[in-house]
Image 1 (cartoon, rainbow, N blue to C red):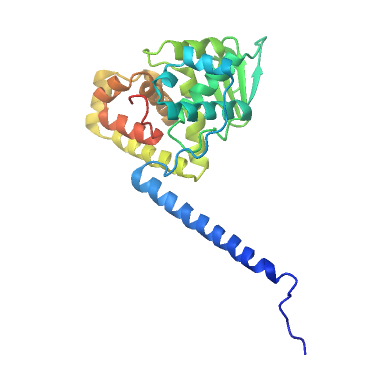
Image 2: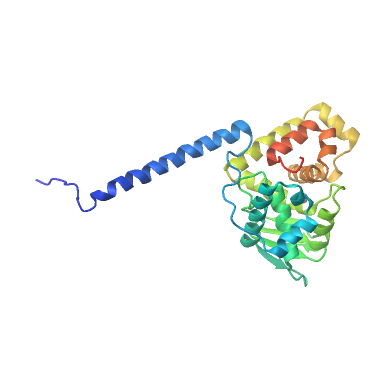
Length: 277
Ligand SMILES: [Zn+2]
């Protein structure tokens, strides 16, 4: 006969084992609740957990001098934004092309544009981007054998930018042209197609709302009549969303005035409740 005896040597482990199982179960319940909450209220339950990373003094001066969105944030949001910009800079590899020397200013401003667009999200780091390639001006793209000022290349996990066009994009704040926002939106949209996290699910839901809205005859007529969005938006769904994001960021009041329902869906999609948006 063989009796399985509890092993007294490891019996002391039992409470810990129960605790681990319990914590796992609570996390599982939390995930379910988090998903339900995001779906019900169209925003993450907790958008930002810990704030401990800091940008350097030089980097902070760049944000203060050159980034108007940052200046409009409350002190609490400013610290969160700095944490996110620092994390972004740490997690991406910046590569200069055609003689470009990567500067702190380039890193900070590109990170700031990306983190601004994703500021309402819990997942703000763009999982489909590992490399930021910077050219001085427009560059030849082998993808479609044309000169481009920017592209998002998911196969190479790269965001490719002309520095000249990027700078013009964020410096001129009222022409609805913002290359950084445009390319980051492409990366965010593709991520939302490939992931199932709360931000991607919310993105997909609001994107469907936007598409539905575009099929309404009154909206089609208004788009024709006002010609508000530039022609390029109607190339395909991806370009439409990228252009929509540029208009949203650069002229929220005008956008809201012309197309309040579309504006509202975009605001929910980005969970953008900062700096007067
Ligand atoms: Zn595009």
